[in-house]
Length: 169
Image (cartoon, rainbow, N blue to C red; front, side):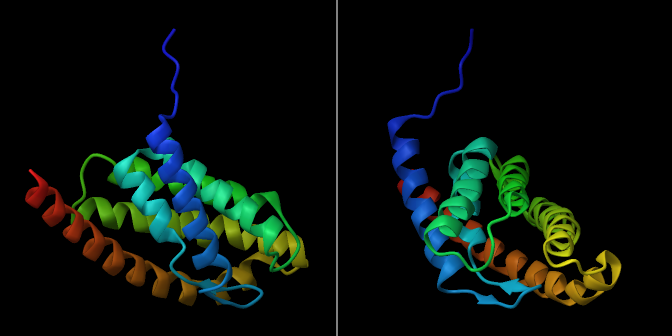
């Protein structure tokens, strides 16, 4: 039987990334009831690149869950945690072994459209009783801005990581 276990090193790194995720998400982001712009995706991205899809999914989900418990912005809703899990999973699937512009675009488009535009809009619609499609129309602008921002940040981070890895070799 082949069991997937996290190493001690992975657990420590995941814990640090979860803490950074909470700070970026709860204190250093711009939030309105139906929109959020911030950099909480960076720790999830780093977990995806360095450790893989499952570890990134755990960082995203636990960062959301613990952040919501310790520093609530609104009512806790498990749907947002599921979206955070899926986002980490998608980052890991696209970016764990290799990072290039095409893979980054795939990761950003999938996380922004599936996670932010569709799922998070559905969760907001359920929570606030707002009609789904008109709400989605208001969120398209945020998704477009975050998509471009995420691509640029991820491209910059992975470019630096590649240079650092070459220096260490």
